[in-house]
Image (cartoon, rainbow, N blue to C red; front, top):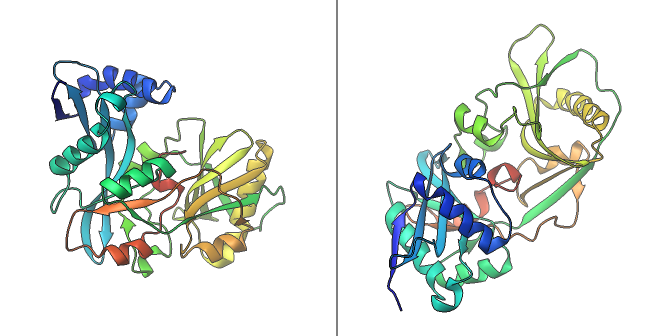
Amino acid sequence: MPELRFRPFVASDLPALAHAFAAAFHVPRSLEQWRHCMLDTEACGMLAFAADDPTPLAFYGATVREASWCGQSIKVGQIVDVFSHPKAREAYPAVFVHNAQAFYAQFCGAGAIQMLYGYPSKGPWRQGERALQYQRLQAPLWLQCLSDGRLGSQGLSMAGQVVKLVDLQLTALPQHKALCFADSSAYRQWRYPLSDSRYLGYGLHGIGEARRLGELVFRLKGDTAYLLRWQLPDQALSGGFWLRVTRQLANRGVARIQLMLAQQHPELARLADLGFAGIAPVLPLIPCFRVFDAQLDTTALQSAFYYSLADTDLY
């Protein structure tokens, strides 16, 4: 049996990677989508091959973000698009694990990617727990709010669709001992491409003020809007802002708004005030992580990584 070889992903691998991904999942993905995922933001990946066969037998990738944890800046990677090729699963049953370990050796550790996280389904989670030291994060909570067509409070002006996201952090998180992503405006423009009609953003300004008081970003899919990013203003303004946004969403045919976030997320009470309530899981995900820097407290991270849909590649 030919020996396996592993090497980092490069841009010229895109066509072969796209073909192998389609064979693994029976879902085609365009080269443009792959460029967006792997080349238009900070990302890295590892490929496995057999001898001189140019077909990738496995892929393990991650998009990389800067985060703040206990006063220090760390690099965090979200595990994305991992798979093994169907023709490798019998000939090389451990190819996925060996490729993942090659990824860790190349890209992870103190001074590199210090933590990886992802959202596998049950089968990949079991393999990751058994062979790759995956640990569970807080369980996910799915929430839903029915779209409301009522008018909001007077005395506010809503900016409508946001053309350029401003450099804001999520409210409440900095006051908690939490893992907080320090995303740049360039990253947010990549993550929420508002030139794409599937994404919709709203900004709130006080009358006659340029300063942004609040911000909401949605991913539209059918009659559902998925809430990806929320920067809620002071409590006195939140209700009016939300009602005006939901009125506009209802006029677009949106019947419900959904989101996923960690069960202990500090914004849960504010979201409940806006009308969100728990629903059955929309997707069977198991949030998990692995740490590669001994200075990071895994127990604390398990309870203080307040992830949401924005921290996935699902929408």
